[in-house]
Length: 398
Ligand SMILES: Cc1cc2nc3c(=O)[nH]c(=O)nc-3n(C[C@H](O)[C@H](O)[C@H](O)COP(=O)(O)OP(=O)(O)OC[C@H]3O[C@@H](n4cnc5c(N)ncnc54)[C@H](O)[C@@H]3O)c2cc1C
Image (tube, rainbow, N blue to C red; front, side, top):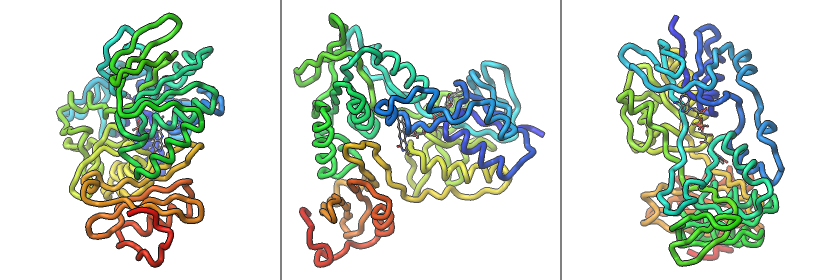
């Protein structure tokens, strides 16, 4: 019997493997991974410095433990280099393997910023536990960290590193941190909370040059300011890793295109996680978060076991792990931003921002401090018309 082969041992690859084994105990399963195959929850990486977690404390299971538990053959340190979709073969750094069904879960790659300067190549990024380990070793004895990008991950690292006692500077071209995800009132709240924590903000600008300087690194910003720092961390967005998919001739856009069932353009080949571009309401977009990959893993596992079911992509708020100002965000669809409006209210010491489209239907929200019951209430109100102002007397701004 030809095996199921999964490329990648991140949360996407391993969740498919676990879900598949619940349904099928006998089909051989190979997991091919470029790393050591240890399982860890990646979201922990931006919350681990303040807790002084060593990398091995974040690993829940080794590849060997998972191989035994799932009765799988896990090939660690092995890179997939190509796929022959006609003869159903995966080429790897350790030879070629035939598959019955194949799952691509190779994740994303950090975007390398085009910045001048003799230290530009020393900019670090953290998208893997090995990057976390490397960053920690570089951090030893250094105190000043400059983070490029004040999105979700940049803000989380800023709060975490400041909590661990580092002097953190956050640089972002937007007017506020999290400006593409959060309502302005919440973004402003986060800015104040991070500044109170000691994080310096340089907003509305970018790094123009990064050069070595006596005893450290000098970052020249486009607005003329100059930062002296020890380490530069890039937290700008990631790019889906398309290398294997493009070599195989699969349809790609920003990510590997998958249909509502998780299928790629080639028969018996599926994709999910940060490398994929999901289909939702007739549109496609990457969804580099845990909730979509869990939903996709459940559907793809059923497909591997012979039953095609659609991926149930439910709206799921992003929890921003900034202890100084914990947030839950469900951003409105990007195309709706120009035509709708945010409404902010204070309810029992919580700031709630609701986004209404021109039909007065709520299509997004944000909440601080984030809290499960209210989050559920807001989720239940999603897609419904607004509550009248009479029921909501503390409305601050329209
Ligand atoms: C710091 C940080 C914090 C985050 N916090 C949150 C959060 O709070 N909530 C949330 O929802 N999301 C969060 N995310 C996003 C979330 O962690 C990712 O969406 C998710 O982990 C992606 O999993 P993946 O398996 O698709 O990719 P990855 O974890 O990148 O796994 C890819 C796997 O493929 C392997 N691989 C790559 N290329 C090859 C190849 N050619 N051959 C063989 N193997 C290969 C790699 O070695 C790896 O094992 C965070 C991300 C980061 C970086």
